[in-house]
Image 1: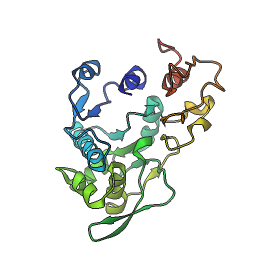
Image 2: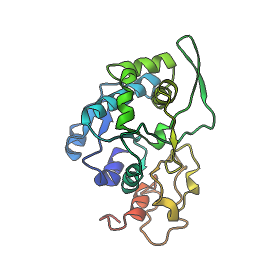
Image 3: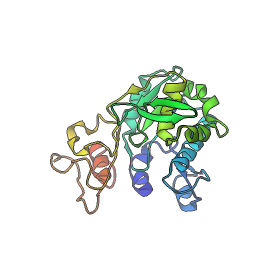
Image 4: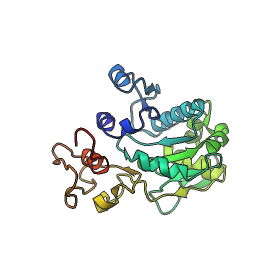
Amino acid sequence: RINLIIKTWFNLARNQTYFFTDADNSELSNITGGHVINTGCKDRHHREDLSCKMAAEYEAYMKSGNKWWCHFDDDNYVNVPLLVKILDGFDYNEEIYLGKPSLSRPIVSMYKDGFVEVMFATGGAGLCVSSALAKKMEPWCLNGKFLETSKDLRLPDDCTLGFIIMNRLGVNLTVSDLFHSHLEPLSKLKPPVLRHQVSFSYYQNRVVDIATYNTQSKVFNQTVDPTRFLSIHCCLFPDTEFC
C-alpha cells in the first residue's frame, strides 16, 4: 500500500506528508526523506491500537505549527491540488472539522456512566482539522488524553475524534461529498468527475471504474493496477513519467 502512495500522490505533497507506522522501517524512511514516525503502537487493527496511532498523529501535528491537520488511511488516494484548493476556501483560524460521515445517524455508545450519540467523519475517507480547532482539542487529546477518551467511549479513532469535536466541543462537521472511503459504491465515480474529488479508496472489487469510460489517459489492466490508483493518477496527471 505504501509503495503505491509513494509512486503516486506522495510526490505532490512530499514535504507535508508523514507516514505513521508501528515499527521502524529504514528503507521507507530513506525513500520518504525521513517522513516516517514510529508511533510505538501495536500493529493490530483494534480500537486501542488505532486510537494510539491517531493520538500520535495529533501530537506530531501540534508540534508542527501547520495550518491544517489532514488524516488519510493507507488505502486512500489523495488529489492533492484539489485538497489544497478546498482548504484555501476555509479560514484555519476558525474551528473547522471537514470530512464525510459514512452513517446517516449517530452511533449510540456508553461514555463513563451514560449513553452518548456520536457523529463523525469517516477516517477511511480522509478528514481535516483546522489549527484553531486542533488547539481547542488539547485538553481531550494531549498527553494520553485521546487514548483515555477512546477507552471511556469504547469506540475507535475516528469515532473518538468526532465525539471530542462535536459532542464535547460543540463544533459541527462540515460535510464534503468529495471524500470517498471503501464503504461507498466507488464504481459510480467516472473519469469525468475524478479531478473534482478529493480522495478515493478501494476494497477488493470495490474500485473506481476507470476503464469503461476513460479513453484519453493511460489505463493499466487490473492485474497490474488492482486498486486503480495508477490509472487514477494518470487520469489526473497524464504527464507523470509512468503514464
